[in-house]
Length: 585
Figure (tube, rainbow, N blue to C red):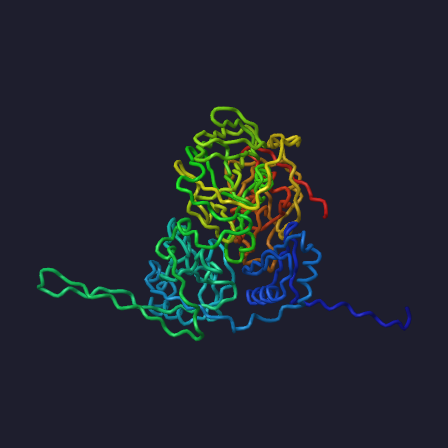
């Protein structure tokens, strides 16, 4: 070793993003600042590879959701790493969207007083800032806006409101944002905007996309002139016409749609042409079938609308995708045609035309015109006959497919799908007695296959073995192995949004020094996927379902593999789950 030249230690680039696993379908790119998030998101969007389904920016991360059949996770990791270090924010040349605002929020005066300024000064400061859409989430079209010129860290309300009206503009932490539709919310409300923040008929449907810049343009508060006296019948002077301050760059044209008047997105399904094999909705006078009883919950579902998480839109779609695909194949439909997802059974409907029908998934008695029929077998359903899907003895969700596909009689597909999202309200409303469904004329139709010899059997809902792929936040837990050592039980709090598990709580690690400010809080919001296992502060895991939020602040310890999600959709309250490590692909 005498005279040898020492080998220098490798230089670690502290600005390089950290790439964390997110199940078998994603990677989480973690950086240190929101400016770096915007830079990473812009770079990945510019060099986007085939097979990338979604790029979801959040407070300190970008979730890269891929289709492993088209882009493997190792190849995706290499593509992300090719960009090198992150050294700056995105260019300030992003377009400016100008939002008219009236500063009339119910929290304006009290918040200004708490900040030690006048309400007018708070409004002026808010309007003077140029904001950037950092990420979206919470609800479709809801953007989290930040500005380097905004100095205040505003606390959320101690008790969230059960109703925040559409168009309300609020503040929370270092963010501002506007509610696209009426929802609950805990932000402090300072104003109102009439801008159409989310239009299912537009392309893109969300007005505010990540990276866009936003200016709030104050408009006069409409006032009524005092009535002259002593005129017996007072007259009101017209309110002044609101005017917009000129934008630094031309703003996109205003988008008008019925959701501007009503915040209920289920009433505004848009005018997007039906796509992805759904065909054209058949608008016969009497429809195809009429619902008599929907049971516990019945919704129209297909294979969902992946690829829109960055706009705050969950994929939704059938919880047991394989069962719906099988049902469609058995009546000759394209696999992505829409059917009815029946929860726990109790469904009755009357045919208004001669149909062919099949029920798959959960297992229970089925009759057509009072005659018992088998599941997983296509049967004629004569006009006027009643179909009864009784309460399921095994499993949770059954899928009714009709040859030709189904849609609500007046529906148009939104983002290529008819799926009902129970969290956001997108898609057709859950079915009610008297609801009429039409044939969607799905194409191309195949012949109805002959009797299958496949040994169909009821879903196993006693003890399920569920494979898990690693999550990005395993290091938040003192003993991540406890997730695999415990036999968990599905609680009664289980639906399409998520499944809460009963069992011994998972303990958190003591916060690292760099996370000390978060010792009593959660992570900054991160992108989420269906199947992600979040762990709230109480330690009880929650598995996100197809209607789960696209961002969340609870750490994800592991992710249910994509193939196992269908099996998990049939887990009833009380079903026991045992997790195991998924085998590497």
